[in-house]
Amino acid sequence: MNKMIDRAEGERVILIDGVAMSMNDCPVRDVLDSVGGKWTSLMILGLADGPRRFSQLRRFIPDISQRMLTQTLRDLQRDGYITRTVYPTQPPSVEYALTPLGQSFLALLRSLVHWSTENHDAIRAARAVYDAEQD
Amino acid sequence: MNKMIDRAEGERVILIDGVAMSMNDCPVRDVLDSVGGKWTSLMILGLADGPRRFSQLRRFIPDISQRMLTQTLRDLQRDGYITRTVYPTQPPSVEYALTPLGQSFLALLRSLVHWSTENHDAIRAARAVYDAEQD
DNA sequence: CCGAATCCCGGGGGATACTG
DNA sequence: CAGTATCCCCCGGGATTCGG
Image (cartoon, rainbow over all chains, first blue to last red):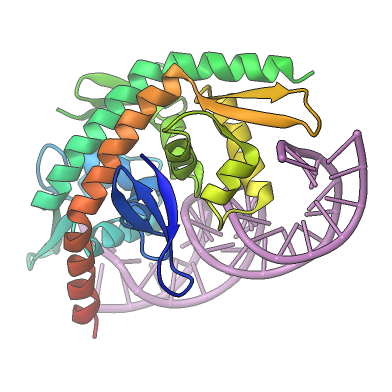
């Protein structure tokens, strides 16, 4: 049951299944900002099988630029999804791995991947119908 | 088990849990583009309890602009998540409702909402630690 | 090998005003 | 009531170059 209520001074809250969701400080917003990024989800999937090095991830996602690879990893690290370990070899190597939080999120991501492949045809079909109606 | 393979002419494919995911025509990308929008998820949640009219949705999400409300609804309609029904009354009223596809997606969204509230504290904590380390 | 710094562009999205 | 139509701004993200 969803509902919109007003609490204190101008603080707006939406109730979703009984859970209060502030507009200013929304948990879902945080997660959506992560999952919504262009590369974040793919990055987590790339770490699904275990720790990977920078260059390995780069080969795994050939279309990503170095800049976005670094930034995406930083963002995920900041939010606690992955760890970053530096090995002082020569040349240096850096290893990224999922945290328990990241692995937990991976499960969610897997169900999203599954749903997407499952319903992709329906979406494409609906899109075709809609575009055809637009004369 | 994830793996990157090359198929025909320059077509790159990533295998995720045995499912081939093209970079050019990725099912997950379509869904992520929807779920990643600033208002789409909230909109679907706003229709969770049944059909709603334009102005009802507007009151439900006070922070959204008319422009984005319209556009978000159009996008969701185009991808087959919701339907749009016009009643020729005076003044006209328009009703939006989830399709079976939309309801199916709602289930996924609910688990995402649940996960977010469940792990919000962990994310915030990780973020605080990371920011503190950055001297 | 693993980045940081800089430059730059497109488009998502806000504010406002107007219509049937 | 349920939308269009403009204008404008910000920033996500690409390309490129330089450094430890």
